Image (cartoon, rainbow, N blue to C red):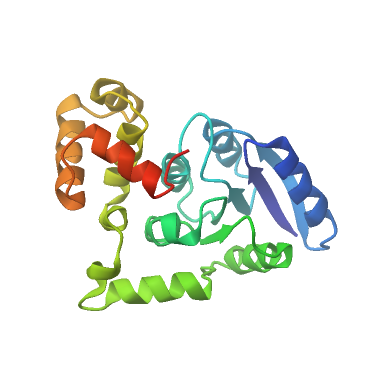
Length: 212
């Protein structure tokens, strides 16, 4: 039996997934969470085999939640089920430790296949994501990447927080980093993305559907 934790801030989504999974003889929803912090509490208990998690949550981004879960339980499979298209986050989150990435518009049967795949310790990668990953491995791959896909895990965290309007001081506190360190990450983000200000970051994130 594969024990699943569903992490999504919409109760109706959790209920729909729970109902669908109940029809599968090898799947059991044993925990639910509406925030990243609640998800981490579930992970600390160590009684789940797969986490199915949205990337857009009220208290923190899925990027932050994934980083926290990976730090606590590096071998626990995390399947991202997001309303954002694959082109926005999939390759970045897979590189940062997600076991798979699916858009919520996918066929429900594909979610089941993905859960069974990641529960066996394998990655679940759709054809579209595989193509983007392959492009990134080639000599000219970065030319096909969006600027945010070139960011490291921590740089992406800093970028998303700043794009939402957080100050460097508040960000330093929430990520347990010094103001100087966050400022350094900000400078790297600006350089890699070719942007000049926080308002540029916000515009880019909104234009590319990275924040709502």
